[in-house]
Image (cartoon, rainbow, N blue to C red; front, side, top):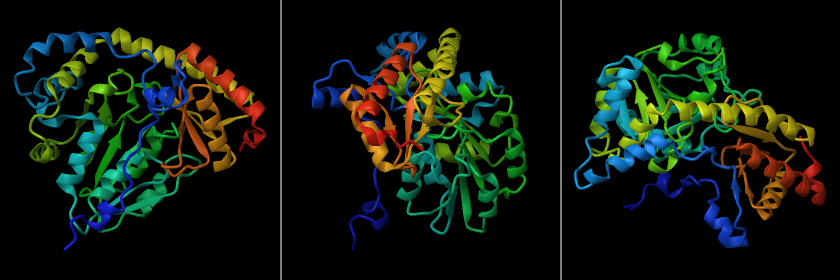
Length: 370
């Protein structure tokens, strides 16, 4: 008898972007600019920190499973509490979806070149994962709809897509959802919703309220509290009821819930975050293109750069590390010829561009751009 199932033995665990402390230790560089993990360059929401501090006195008590945050979110979005779930980041809720709804003969359907964390979760169940190629770095909803069969149970869509930053439009989603049978669950991962909602073509999933759509959002990006792991989801109450059956009973933690409640009140911080991102996008993308790099249009807080090949990616990534700048190669995402760069502050973006110029000048093969 096998101790570990073969689908777990063969699984590649999710590998996050290189930590700042690791680079400091390896190269002795103290001033590190990390633009690898789509973190908020302004730091955490001040009101989230304030709310966490206020709840430190309650740490001897067990958490209430996110009930207070669910109530706040229900009021904010005009829902019932039974339509809302909170968890340890959106990935925590994804994991519960996998546990609650997948059976042995079911299939999961998604795109190539999307969030690698979802691939890991789906494969951890031993379920067949079916992927469809991106179309010009966008989700190909027509091709995904065409692959639905009697075994399809879950479809995963990220909008905007991580790591390309591209979106599918309202018209595209309207046409797609008509082709999805009611027994097939659609996970709509809107981790970058706050950034994308400014686009007139963006299909906010809350406008649909479909019985088979589960919306996932997070406080990790625009609200700047990735370190406390807090996310939330919206769905029909029958779906939420079953998710609550498999969720860890005391998840999220007391401090994570408090941080989420505080962050929702911090409208000023959110507005400043969006302004800094827009300013950075307006200046950074033209600068990247001016030095010969090919970038995709983005509706998120990062930009995907398309290079000639893996060798170019490795040279650029390694060269930037030597300058104390961390970006994210996308080999694990199925895009080995691409890198992802978080949009930082103006100063961080300036350091990035200067470092890129230096690396490209000193390493000829990095000029072999797509």
